[in-house]
Image 1 (cartoon, rainbow, N blue to C red):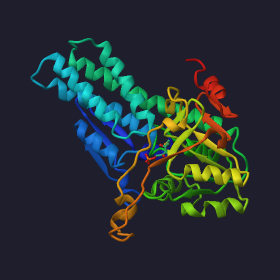
Image 2 (image 1 turned 45 degrees about the vertical axis):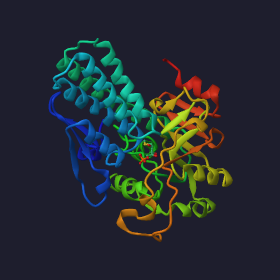
Image 3 (image 1 turned 90 degrees about the vertical axis):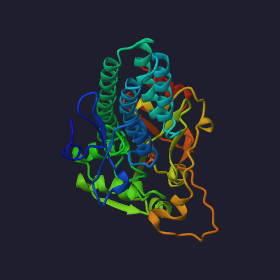
Image 4 (image 1 turned 90 degrees about the horizontal axis):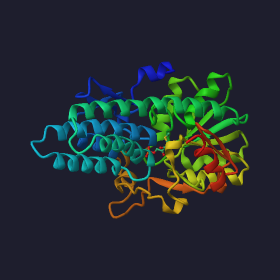
Length: 359
Ligand code: MRU
């Protein structure tokens, strides 16, 4: 069930019938303005993903899936052979899947759509195919909403007393539902648990300050923003009961890629004996990779660091190192909360036993 907040905002929504368009809440404008962009072709969906108008692993998967409806629409109207139309669709699928390289949910969602395309044969009825893909994209979005609720419920069973420290944004803005890490926080609050949420501002693009604080404010959950570098000092005070973060890709051994700064936070949590939880749906697991060393890490523009939000903060001659993600080794993670259950004592065996359960 949607919260009143989710009924108010629409992170990603399809408008109209299968020949409609994708409406995306432009997260680059938050928290000062609520603006939407209308994506009527694949390049505009790719632009929205690359520019982080839509962001967060599950949300970009959902946007990518809807992008494939637009890919069929484009190919359908080409005056060309079916073979060429099909190869055009495959190219657009690849362009969408590679718009951001770290979050596996994007490729996972595109691959789900590609199965439908493959099953439609070499000479499909493009209008029918477009409708089937729209249905599948809607299913991916609805499933994600349900997954978030399961994650929220599971997470509440292991949430210790005390305040909570989180990093980046993992809420309704990043998923098809209430969120993953933030979903646990919102669920626990709705059940009557009381705490303060500390949100790392999350340099350089401030997803914590701009987005997590915005969401929590709407839920009327008390939130305090801190600069990322203040986390060590905060953890030393002993008031934080746990850290909870999301994930962009989790490998077979439980190594977890998430927003840059997550690995440092996990090390700090270990040093201060604070439980460190990761929350993610099974679509974020990439069991084809043995360890986090194999995860591609997106490097973003130097300008995000040197000139954030159009404010020149470093001399013109300086260069910047701007990885968007880092990898936290599984041994630093107390537990991974998924919709299929909780992975404790993170290892190849425990990941496999929970993630392949019932598949
Ligand atoms: O670069 P972003 O804002 O897309 O990074 C997002 C994160 O790192 C999130 O923690 C992750 O995608 C999980 S969202 C449920």
